[in-house]
Image 1 (cartoon, one colour):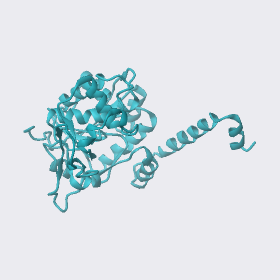
Image 2 (cartoon, one colour; image 1 turned 180 degrees about the vertical axis):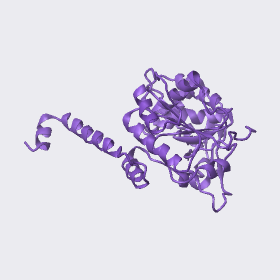
Image 3 (tube, helix red, strand yellow; image 1 turned 90 degrees about the horizontal axis):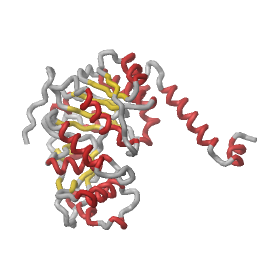
Length: 318
């Protein structure tokens, strides 16, 4: 499958962040600063309010930042990104339209210059985090699936309503991934169509439907083998459904950094470490971490106030 070369004057892809909410805006500031520490040339941001746009523009006047209104219509908050990207493309289109696309969550810090990684995976659907799936899992009866196995439950919900001809032997994380510029809009449109095919209470994990989209489009998510979680699980025996697999790169040059070495994606239970790392790396000269600390103190206070009065009084020392 030939997508053509990455373009732009420097041959590098466009990195796009879709952000809303004060805390994630602060993470986005640190993420952008981590990229600018390597003089990365092509970054765009979407936000949901004009106040958010002004906050980004005041710190990064040369980074295009656009306000897009997102209506999720009953879908959970974690699905914000595909909705925001769709609205952005429909209303504006990318200003760096001649480049391939890297979608990047705000809670990512770039630890090494990404140029080497992007050029090594040029023309490939690189994904920062790939988790292998046992093909036999697709034969598990829905009533026997663990409530915590939300990727499988989402795919089963989609299968029941729409049918499926191929099943991904992977789940991909949408927090950091790259696609050729001609492929990205088509993938996004198909992904959104799948999200809309389910009611909000059945669309438990939008990334599971992104994996289904990749499988249908014959897009092979690719990463260094050492970065793939549960590698070889997809080769375990069993399973009656046709599956599409990922590509695990094993011939990485010794001096080439992996995706995990290049960027760290801090998940929800790692946010305190994100704050510490951003400060240690010199990205918080305006001490935005104080805003996050205040928000968390206020959050703890409000949660404590929601406790029964007897427990609250005891916690308050009365």
